[in-house]
Amino acid sequence: MSGHFASNRSRSVQPARGKGGGIADCLTGTLSCRAVASILSTHVEVYVFRRRRGRLEFLALRRSPDRRKLPGVWQPVTGKRERGETALGSAVRELAEETGLQPVRWWALETVTMYVENDALMMLPLFAAEVKADAHVRLSDEHDAFAFVTSVEAARRYLWKSQRRGLEAVRSEVLDRPVLARALEVTDQVRDRGERPTRRRRTRAKVRTKRRSTSKRSKARRSR
Image: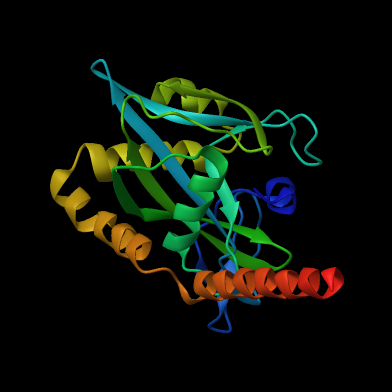
């Protein structure tokens, strides 16, 4: 998760129309609205859950104590999108990098989080992912602890009100409404993405292969 994002996130807002026809940011408790220059989407959040012994449990991750921003804060899987990366692609990558988990099902939630940062209206896509009951978590250096807890406990640990709304969205859009859940499910898209590497990944593979070839040629010259 980006430290800049973590430190500057503000209250979620509902976009409204300004007098000039543009989008305005109207924060709760303010008396006026000012025009927002643009809408950006730079991060994603993934709400991971499992069904274990008849109980639904959500994953909470604790930020490492050496993080510059918000050390020790509990959060869902959160990460920054890479250039040219889709929101879903970013969610899949971030979940794998931060936890090593391979979900059995994915959903793109209808709910999104919106907040204001540096005069831009930021849109944060939300995803839900179900993992097996015995799935093993492998933490990266971004976090130093994890816990699968009830939705009530996850809501207590998460810092932002918008993250508590994210938990509610998983229940109302995925768990309690099967018809809507089927419409929002993107599991097949994730599988297709895994079977066909993106152009960015293919390019990286080519670069690694080229580097290995160059290294071999260099060693051969030195041995002559």
